[in-house]
Amino acid sequence: MDTQLNSPVTNNQEMTVKDWLITYVILFFSSLIPLLPIVILLYWAFSENTVLCKKNWAKASLIFYLIIAVLALLFFFTIGASMMAGMEGLQQPM
Image 1: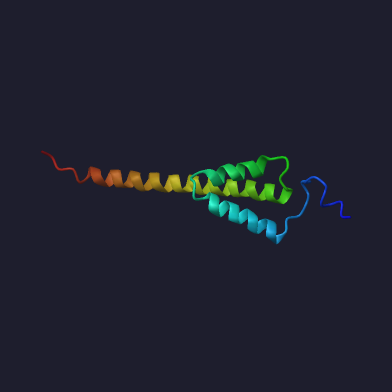
Image 2 (image 1 turned 180 degrees about the vertical axis):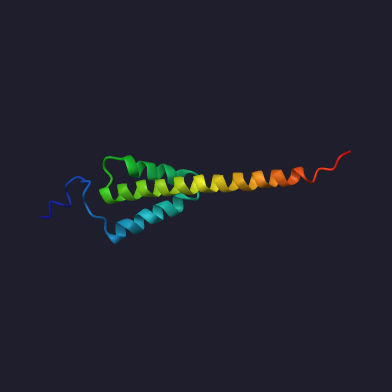
């Protein structure tokens, strides 16, 4: 009998294609609820019973999302500031 099936999850197991597909399906359907994918990624990144490769992938995804969020905020603040500066020249004296 295969003892690997009955053993608890170890952090250095490999994930199969089926495991990755399930992971992406969970993230896809959880994205219908705001912030739920972030919570799921946080759980996978810092849980003790998550496979090591999924844990590292979740950490990398969180870092990537953080970088994208910072860049988006910088972009919107830059556009907003330039629009505000451009509107100051449009004001007519009364």
